[in-house]
Amino acid sequence: MSRQDRRDALTNAERAAVEAQRAAASEAREAALLERNRIARELHDVLGHSLTGIAMQLDLADALATRGRSEEANSVVLRTRSIAVDSVTQMRAAVLALRDDSQSLSEALKTLADNEAVPFTCTGEARPATPDVTHALLRATQEALANAAKHAPGATRRIDLGYTADAVHLVVTNSAAATGHTPADRGWTGLGLTAMRERIAVLGGTVRACPTDSGGWAVEARIPG
Image 1 (cartoon, rainbow, N blue to C red):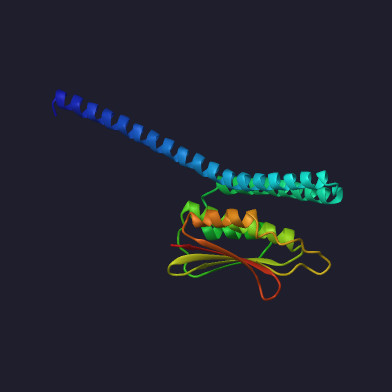
Image 2 (image 1 turned 60 degrees about the vertical axis):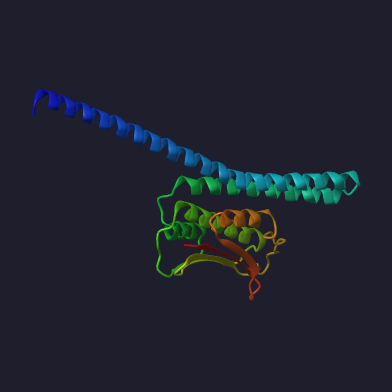
């Protein structure tokens, strides 16, 4: 190889290295942008719905107070505080879920089940899920478990994940409130279920929440793929 050929080869190698660095930097910027968008979307879901609910409740409290119905107004204020506390809990759960995409869907749900001390089953042939699917179903499970603890104190809860040929199915169930505990008003007709349905719908899935024959509650999510 002549001296000129060696110089040309070195120049080409340097040019290729520069192009590779540029491509890597571009991919890193794109990944960071996607991650920021994902975080923004999740925080928008949590904060948007909760702040809307808080504003509506405070308007109601103001209207009741204006009419001299102070006891009812105080009850609404207490309920509003509960919404705010729940929002903080959901925010922390969302951030925790966003931090770690390294686990598979079944692993993430098993970890959550262990942390919550609830049974977990996985049936069917497990297959890889996209980070968006894993995150959406993990958040749905977190919300369903929290809702069960709030509205059916002392109830037993469980998580069931199933794979079929064309979809992944998630079912979170709870029994009726334990004896001696007063169940709160069922909240899955409100903002929490709406946020869950919207998050799953983006992925082409559906969510159903319904009472069980035994007096408990079930939240079912299905995402095709």
